[in-house]
Length: 355
Image 1 (cartoon, rainbow, N blue to C red):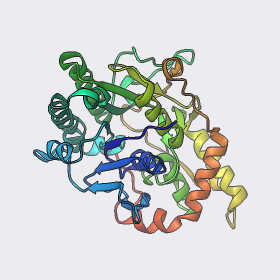
Image 2 (cartoon, helix red, strand yellow; image 1 turned 30 degrees about the horizontal axis):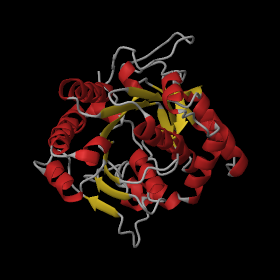
Image 3 (cartoon, helix red, strand yellow; image 1 turned 60 degrees about the vertical axis):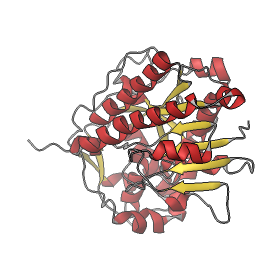
Image 4 (spheres, helix red, strand yellow; image 1 turned 180 degrees about the vertical axis):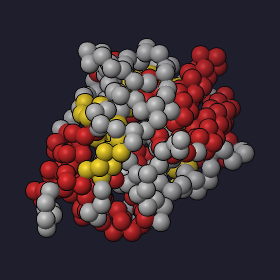
């Protein structure tokens, strides 16, 4: 599958955004404009841009006045993929302000600037232009019935400040499509994993705790269920929706890998026992059950029939293969895992409301 055009991607130095840009740069006809304010979780080094004139990084906040309008006029992209967001639930509990500003106001400013630009286009450029908003399954809330899963028509019932800020973005994007006939598409993906993920998220955090022989925190009883998708599958899903999805629609992108948090932790421990055993004992002996996160969603599950029907996309990466590849990557990149991220996050508990 190829999409050859100029892309404006926000948040392109983040986990999903950098994976998307690495993929797009494989095609020598693609031009990438990356707008990223470079937050603590951003990583410019995750994108190899040596001698690459097709990649332009603009280190600015999308909320900066006139930034988006000026960038659009300068580079005239065909596609907008809006990923820029604060994304860690625990941090949203500690500091919801930044999530409201980045995820809601940032999306508003993107829509405002892109709509104005779209109105200035004519002919084929007008016809080709699309705005894709990347969201999350967390906007739907929690679903306990194991026989059910969220569809694109499910109600939005966010339970954390992060999820609420992303749901607000979902609704803003929808409203610009309905009210102004603006060519929008939304994707809602399940939990991503893979290389270059900042080690505040579960999988890289567990790997880091194991390698440093520290206690591995598991919230509550660890029975919370998540649907895991490899980031490589997700970015192909995003680009497939951009190419083949219907304007004005939203698409769930899931991996069909429902696993409890405790099972994930034990799986990582088991793999590390095989490839990098401890001197004494097993890694799962480091597991420490801690106080649960406030309003912790019990289960996420996405129905992906719509994206299959409309675009033909299906996830392809087997979870067991994907998690082993991911663990091996972190083992081979411990300088980044430990030293380059340490000053930004020391691994301490976040999102723990004091009573």
